[in-house]
Image (cartoon, rainbow, N blue to C red; front, top):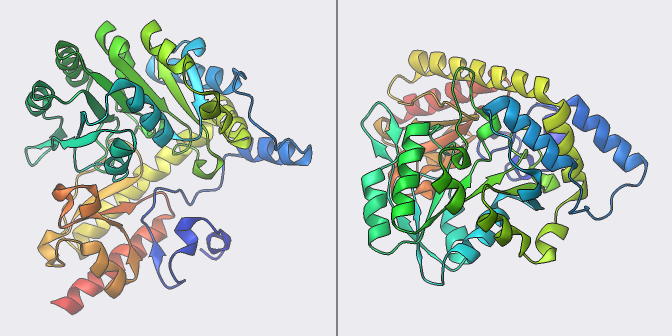
Amino acid sequence: MSALRRRTSEKWSVYPEDVLPMFVAEMDFPLAPAIQEALRDGVARGDTGYANPHDAGPARAFADYARDAWGWEPDVERIAYTTDVSVVIVESLRRLISPGDGVVVTPPVYPPFYDLVPEAGGVAVEVPLADDGARYGLDLAGIDRALAAGARAVLLCNPHNPVGLVHSREELAKLARIVARHGAAVVSDEIHAPLTHRGVEFTPYLTVSDAAREHGIAAESGSKAFNLAGLKCAMFVAGSERMAAMIRALPDEVSFRTGHLGAIATREGFARGRGWLDAAIARIEGNADVLERELAAKLPQVRWRRPAASYLAWLDLRALGWGEDPARHALAHARVALSHGPAFGAQGRGFARMNLACAPETVVEAVGRLARAASRAS
């Protein structure tokens, strides 16, 4: 922990040292050796200038990874770079909707979606995830109604943050048919896809049908998988000539703002960091085991469902009586920083999100602190 506290990123600089930071989606793990080596070499040779938007290296590395991991090899000629997935979302929506159009979001969902939609000129239309108490899923009937009422796009979280839902191919194919029937569009945020857990099949949206390829844009990045958020590199991926033409028409500055070191790190991660990524996923799954065990022993009132992707645990803390935003209570009384549930939408009231990309001892300590706070409150 002392080494981690020498970091100056948001996760390690916002709170005092007595707080366990388990909020923002950033890993505690060391960088993949291949990425460390490439960045050291780049800095040593002074290779810190502008990114080359025509360098196919990162796109080819991603396409090769997608082929091997998911059976999908996107056309490198239909991939373009930018700073991050948020920019992919905003710049895509700006061209897919008209000002004032509705864009479907599916809460509880990544909080910046509520800012990105209006930045693109749209209005967020909430269609909450379906929840039968055992699993989450898309409310396809609700999305159908929203599009029939005038919404022009769906902002898909695939896999879904914060609940760790990996949408099935069947569900995505149904969504594509609904969207096509209404002449709408989909922007699929797939930033957590490389962190899909073992034994789970991730389906890229653009693989489900010709209709999906015709109306969809995928937002891809190595930033979550390899902990590269501060280096700024993401990709627009198109599956049809119509969408590829839209990408090619983007202003040059959209690509020129890509971080050059981010492009280098992205290329090396997808090309030479796969073993590291496999090990990271195994550690995350192990931490999920630890969390399950610790909650059962110390906080059985807290409910959660194991995610199928990424390193985020969506905790139902309503039984503790800590109010609509229990992360506030956790910070004040347990000195554990969690993500605020209500920021993910009204469905997040009474919930908080915990980051499991850490040492297992951190998970044990966090649950212990929360349990002691709950005991004091009772």
